[in-house]
Amino acid sequence: MSVWRLWMMPRMKQDNGLYSIKYVILSALFFVICAIFSTDSFSETRVVESDVPGFGIPPTMYAGFSRLLDDESILVPEELLDVNKDIKRIAFYFNGDRLHRKIPKQVHLMIENKLLGKFMGLGRFEVIDCVECRTTRVNFENSRMMISQSVQNNQDLRNLSKEVRADAFLLWNASLHEDKFTVNLRLVNAKSNELVWLKEYAKKTTREQEELEFESIEMEFTISSWGISSERDGVGATEDASLSGVTAFGIRRREYTTLNKDVEYSLGVEYFRNFSSQDEFSVNGFNLEGRIFVNISALKDWVNTKAYVGIGQAFFSGSHGLMMKFGLEFPFVTNGFMAIGAAYLVEEDVEWKADANYEDSSEFGGAGLDLTLGYRF
Image (cartoon, rainbow, N blue to C red):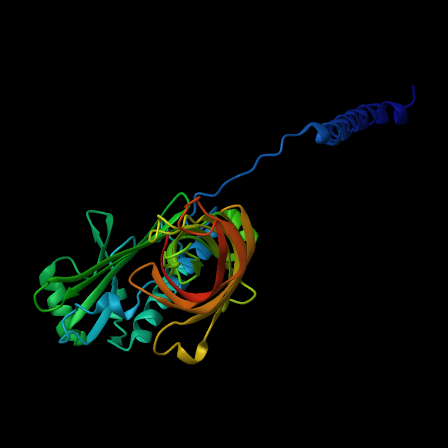
């Protein structure tokens, strides 16, 4: 064997060893890549939910509080009539969760801005911007971070009132439980810490309502007096009998959309009957009605007034006829309203209870005054 071959043999063995190592490495990488692609169709996809506050918040939270505070039946001037006239300058103070664990900061700011706008629109108070009221203290004690509000007791509240020159503080907080959105308000006298006014507003809002883009869906109970009349001719010397009106009890579903908040729609059913002249007349019936409401912007600065027009079909005492209504609606106490207008029912013949002193039938219907009291829930 030549010297050259003897010298090359160790080198060849060394190269073969390196080649074997490279082959093993490349084979392993190829196997891993094939395994990844071959198991991709069988892999499990997991939905990871973040624990960071603000993520995973129900999509209706912003819309829910917005619907609640956009309701024109809340924070009306009549609710604050009993507040002392000496309280003129007020400042807002949030006494809830300052870390925004439950209510995201953007929703918190929206709620506060809408409350500020509501109170400024009342014209009853001078609303001042209190920067100190939004201050949050952060202290470190024994290697622990302590977070607290700027006001810890009643004396701190009185001292803060002197700094910002406020007659009272409006303490507020917001909460959400399932589909119920709640805002709590407390007006506290800055000098005496006396609680002078307390109110809670709540409304339920579902995701279905948000998907349908209905800003508000409410139910209403109504009681009405309709001046719809009838006359029944007497027989012989018997004087004619007259019916001057009927009373109606109804329930309506009212809603408005994001397209135009000045227009509302309702669909309702009313039961009506007479409580007077029951010996001569017996009216029992139902009215199915659709109604449209339109805000009258020119009267908004004085009282929130809506004009309405409704049309329906009435079924009564073996007859039926077209019924139409129109008039004006005004707010009345919290969640209440009153309406005054006119009602018209196409006159139809009605068979009355047999009475020898009167004719068996007469016309019921015509035009009359419509007075309504209602409550939303």
